[in-house]
Image 1 (cartoon, rainbow, N blue to C red):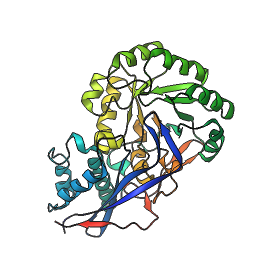
Image 2: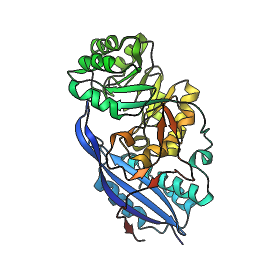
Image 3: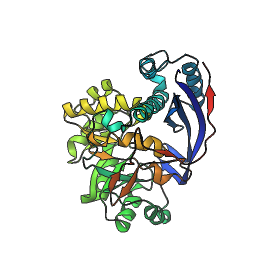
Image 4: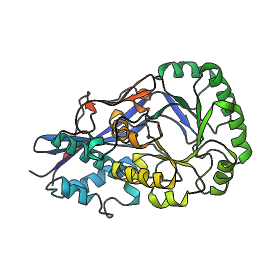
Length: 348
């Protein structure tokens, strides 16, 4: 029997409004994907914050185009994922979701976890982050209490109250601080003020300046003793090569790079270039975050905290114990569907 594709639009809702330099949102539009072959299932996820160019309607249209073809087996779908007319630069999220579901399907078929299939050591220790979005000072204590223990806190900065937020966090929590500006800064002086506020608690920074300001990124990296990770600036292998000497690390996100296979290619090349690797997310559910966590054995830092920020997560997967990432047992991705979802079938 050929592989069949189904999908389910879904709105992931935050426990609290989540603010970044891109704005504040209460949730994120997602599309869950289900593949089936001979009674075995595989699940994938496409989660698209509104500031991304790729939109949910375009993902659904693309899934119909894929599903309208008769896909005989897993190898045929792998080949289809390389079709640039279907999965070009404007379809990274959709490709990531389909490739995730295919990885889960194959793992479930051969009864092996994804990390074994892609030959990544699951036992390597990796630093963990949990995120505090832009918040009023009176909200910070409550938000921190709801988050699990981790090795460091990731703070969204780049807004008018960033300095006050850093100072307040330092009073409330003793963990190292990872500052993420989401391109929200415009001068070196702005960045240095944040660095000074974090003091000896500063662990690293992420994408302080807009993508086109590599001059500022490079100047700041040369002045700081900590790693600056590129996010929006590094989404494929070409951009990774162009970032050498600008950033000392990169943040890989499935919705931006296009899938676990491409994430692994970026990680392998970053290792050759001597760059640090961080695994990030776009506020995916436990499904997407657990899928990415299978790559943790090749990373230095993981920021996969969607499951702790979302109040209607339909899957159960990774957990954290005193800062240690705990993977679920079982084949494939290992995330288990715990909520009944209404999947719509696509017929060839």
